[in-house]
Length: 559
Image (cartoon, rainbow, N blue to C red; front, side):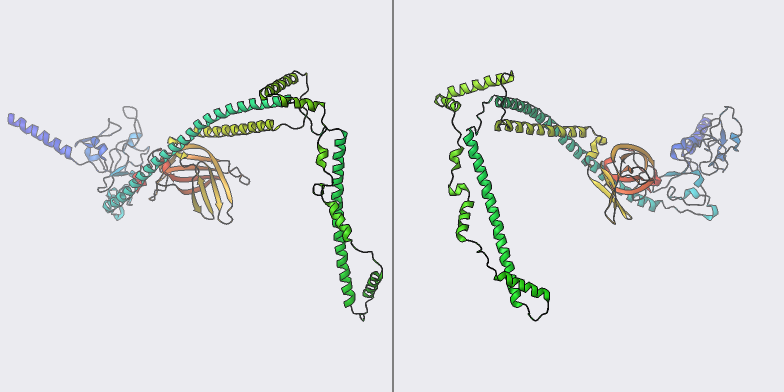
């Protein structure tokens, strides 16, 4: 009896081992192997109430509503309403007809395993991009035989993957450098803000001090006792008038003499021309006009003419034309001194006082006069213009105000810059002002980071603004990445908006939407016009590496 029990237990253990080591059905991935362990029956994955014999797996007939009984065929590729389990309700009242499996599983030994759509199974086409081992065409429909190319494809993929990993590593390194550079630039701006705040505080105090100095200088100016110049009486006025009149006559004499000398020179020149004409003309030439001219010249030359010029008189004129300061005929300086009056004598009394007493009295008199002027008792000084002290004080104040205004303007610009959005880690701060371009036909397109997008003609170098930077944005994309890596991939990407470009004829202002992807270097690889004067650029840059989802997650994209 005991021996029989041992034999039964051994049989059960053997069946368990065989079941555990049994291969997975064709087309089943390792993550779904747990649903196919039984060697007797199969339970539909999404409909546990439905059980099938194992023999009905991959029999090219769709038995399970979710298609899980046909992992290696295309029988359940398109679940239709004619399927037996979708015509009515099961005892539970609900049938799940969503495919339970992602597709047909290709082991791709020597490369990356992947799934292919069920519609591709035994369709007579070798799908080497997804199923390099050719197992998706196991039925050899139409005589198609797909060889296993995983070794060579895997080798090429590994080579590209190494290049891609190296490029991504370099891109990540470059982004770290950009972030460090951006942090340095931001710190410089912060230092400038702090410095300007200190400078502005000092400049403000300086302006207040200069305002007080100007007010005091103007106060002193109003209280200054003015001694008018040229108050020498009627004789001084007459002397000045005479001096001015004589100078006017002297200048007129010099001008008339110059005109006379010019006229004399012209007359002499004309007479010489006519004399030569008379001597050299041909008397036998019968021209009445010439003969009359010669006779007229003979009559003119025969008349008595007054003497031209007199050296003695010219010397007298030279002496008269000289300024009085050179001849000394009239010493005007002796007549310019004003007459001294009684007030002038009083002013000289202070010369006999000690310096401290003179300064004290002068200051008291100034203060008293200023007080009387401020209270309306005396009128302020009416002398035209301001004193040098007042002008210097005013100029110094204006210069200080200009410096303060410039510093405040710079502080506003730097403070505004610190508040701008430069992307994650302020990374675009390091790229601001740099440009990347691409030649396309007869144009060159240029993107300047956080600046402007342009279209440049190669024919006449004319530039057209395609938009000015407005904001940093994000966008969802779903594109394949070509082998050269110049693609956006799928997922969320950083984007830049450029608007208010040059107006488009019979259209809007030009604008550009720039979508960014992670690359080792800055590269503008695609420009399209989605609508009239609405452009889209695809640009690679290390600045966005790590800021978005990894592109090309689909193995097909990597190939």
